[in-house]
Image (tube, rainbow, N blue to C red; front, side, top):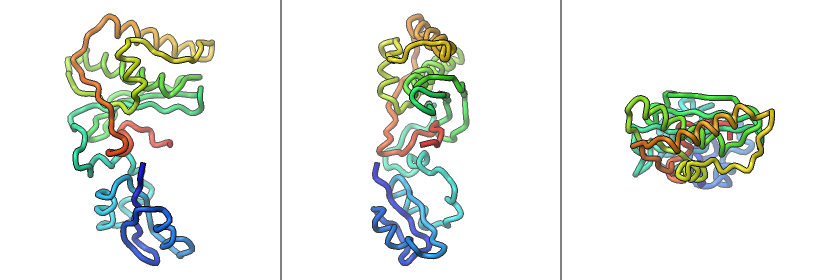
Length: 204
């Protein structure tokens, strides 16, 4: 994904489209203030503001706010995070517009990110069916979306004593998919255009 760099304090200030250009303004410059942004529109808006407004923030999952054709707002976004492969996995769902957390599960031992993404989607589908809510769901995982369509978790990970709880959840999710219909649309999140999905855990 391309990035744009804002320099608020450096040899030259402004918005730069490559790290090389940005680095030339800030490397060795005492007190330099700069940050990368996921698209030009976001970067140009940030440049009109103050560095303090963005310092320390993970802005990658805010890019959609400045996209020309952004995602639908009254939706749910799901994502997973996994430390290691296999490793400790967790997943969650949030309101796309506000980032407010709807659900969060984990951590579960000895899993994969794809499993987490799959479980996040099924969790959202089951929750919204129970609530009678036909809300659209965004996922950034083509693999997990494919598994949901096939009603089968296609992981190559083998069950073991370490991940027994995780495979119990997988079995429940597969059973739910086979036994239920749902009105919710699942749409691929456009990471290239919109930055990280709002449900992202910010650990990349």
